[in-house]
Image 1 (cartoon, rainbow, N blue to C red):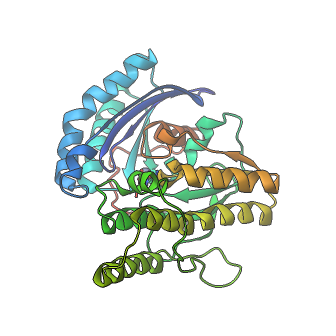
Image 2: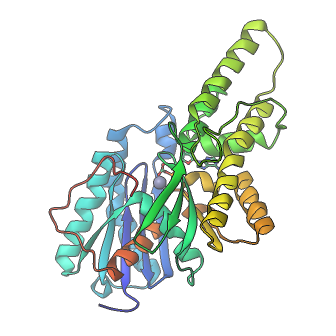
Image 3: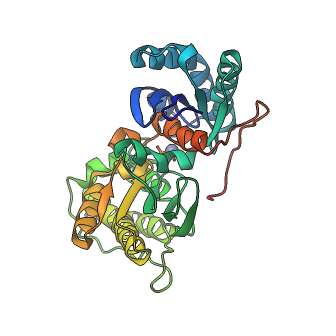
Length: 336
Ligand code: KG4
Ligand code: ZN
């Protein structure tokens, strides 16, 4: 096994077809093609359209990643690919391609859990990063504060009891009449408003890490309907700003609390919601105040990408965890 293996990462779990090449923790290339614009016409991701877009794009995206990295395919030491969670048809495109590529080259296949990929993005941001640390995970499907004991083992300290943070952003975007994908649109609208609309409390229980987004979402739906029924004036931008604070303040607070409780000096974060500028600022301020180091992946490595899949591939490579060619795609994988 090599110290600094060259790994190709492939991601196709949702509407992004992505490929990246790393040598050790050094990122050599990072390519992505998205079908989000096409999906926006339908208000969300249409699985069949996503699968077809992946099938059209995957070959060229992988070849471009190799070319930009200046790496010949024969130089690869492993092929890492997302096998779940995600849309089955979409996953199968990337997974089948990766299997064929790995088999043809005679190198190991590494099936990567997409969520662990989001967490591994921090390893590319700070190549000296070592566990233990506390990590905030906030994506379209998961929201949790995790304690990473080692590169392969983490404990869930707490998280959402219902909707994920990204899901809440997407739903609130719809109520505010914003197109898919909702998160960045809500963030942009929030910049034009002030957080002056009172929002319900996010925390469930006292002193714990668990919180709930469904109450917040329902509150906003009711608020908008009530104001419209009454013909009362209300500001979409103020609602967006108020929602953003309510939804994200708690995440930054809980991540900092987790690190202090576990006595670890470092906080990391990952997942699409971590691309949010307000959350990034809150994390920065919270960590600075508590004397914690913050490792924040750059925005394009928070939303779906293949660099993070290659990074998690490296973790599994070093742990000797390789996958059989019979590996199947999984629509959901429990957080573990
Ligand atoms: O990690 P990701 O790209 O895909 C999943 O694995 O789910 O996360 C997507 C989620 C979506 O719900 C999207 O609305 C949200 O991340 N998101 C954001 C922002 N960018 C993406 N939420 C808030 N602010 C953003 N700037
Ligand atoms: Zn993701």
